[in-house]
Length: 111
Image (tube, rainbow, N blue to C red; front, top):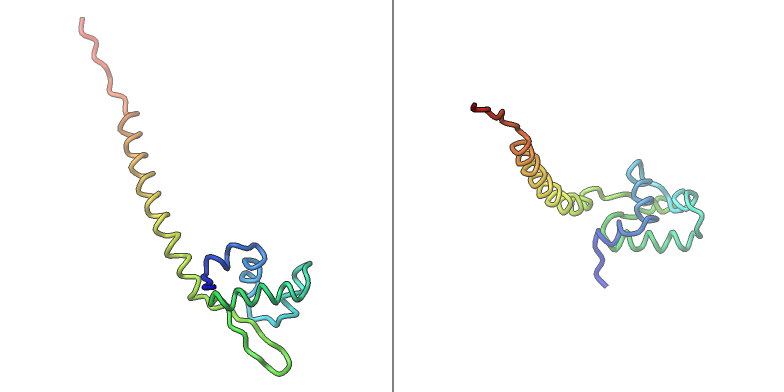
């Protein structure tokens, strides 16, 4: 099954792992210490993040360190940006329209 970055961020546990790794690379036990789920469950989440291309694992001595690949998150950023731009333009247009409608022109009373 092909995995992508959107699958990675769909799960709150994986998002929290990403947040942890954004600060610095961590070994698996250090990641697992931040959760109340089992280490095998964390390992499964790590495998998904690897398959999605969001993290790499490097072996240093007896430890395996996970490191975030920030550039992979650009896919999410680009996808979100298109909608931000779309809605910003729509809301600006609405704001302009409402501003024009609310400008009150004084009525002249002809007697």
